Length: 159
Image (cartoon, rainbow, N blue to C red; front, side, top):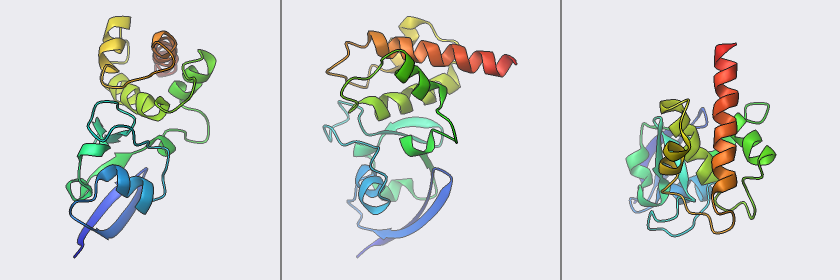
């Protein structure tokens, strides 16, 4: 027996019946076909499944879809709005990705973080992404990408 939920994902409202044990990450990927949110560990250890729910970065592998009822969710597919978001541009310009598996989760964590702290130090950035694992980059380029985005977003806000 399914439970009815209504969620807003990337500005679009969806109403569906879901099994009570369906994880949010599976709802996003399988029910909504938004496959940019990755499944890594299913234990909140890697952060590949990070999305923004009601303005806060959350790991969607440990939230049931029914818990998202009435909430607003942003996935990596909702970040670009006609042009690359400064974070996406930063990852491109500063070579912040290699295999790319962690990138959506990193970007979502960084986006929520920069909303709260638009002018972070390197240490603050490292702390903010500490819940997201990357096996390829060593994080230096990821931190540079987030610094790039923060500076670009600050310049745009001041203009």
